[in-house]
Image (cartoon, rainbow, N blue to C red; front, side, top):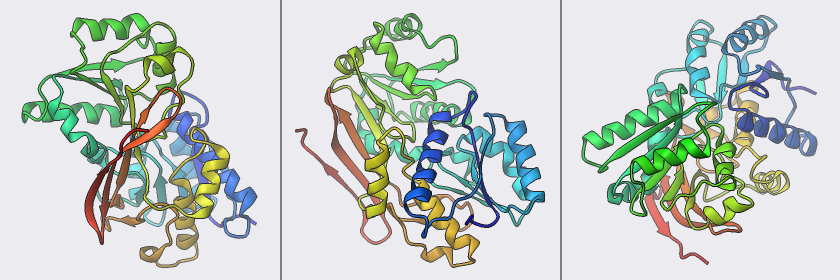
Length: 342
């Protein structure tokens, strides 16, 4: 049986956030296959990373009776569909990793990842202490562009010392270009590199092609840590850090999906999405939905998730080790923990 009036509009091909949406597809299919009594399936449609096609699909499937739409991972896409949802007030959307603060506005779309300014909280001291911050980001995408503006604000406020930015395109993500960016701005071991690059694997692969970097690097993308192999594993040993939106508590079936699919093919928030969908479709109170990962509470106006928790994981050359935990909890308050590397 299918879950009524529900559909996923995912970017499975094209220039969009395909890695994230493929992980969503894999995760949905895993739970539909292994837990069919608890989670009913629904159609998955490929938007081909086209905003125009996404809007066409929304209108087409709305007229066909669908009211719950899972997709809009990129903030650029989410921003483009806001007006459509405003004109269809009985439609409800879900976005897995959109995290720009500019979209913290009244809307009928649940955002399952915290806004990106929260991702900087676990490394606030590193930002302040660094001689300079080097930021590499996907040019023209709302989320990374918004992060750039935020870093510029921190610079103006004196909360970081120096800032150098590099907008990544399809043509300038090369060893020579990135190396020139580092060298021309005198990158050193007292600096830090931040990056939010949609084609993250291509950036990591530059370290298999001759790129080197002496500074600590922080991946502030809302995904799982990168898979690092080959020469890149040597170059990034004890230098690559992933800031991961995670939870101090996960359910048995969440861990089953994560362990089966693996870090690169599992969408950490999707199990909560389909659990939330079950409640909405059956008209249950969403304030009391059981969570499979972390605190599942939303701002009643913006429908952005609140009470985030993060871990910072460092790549030690062969695996990731947790070095820092940051938690915001409605009952325990805010707390942190530092872990000693193995």
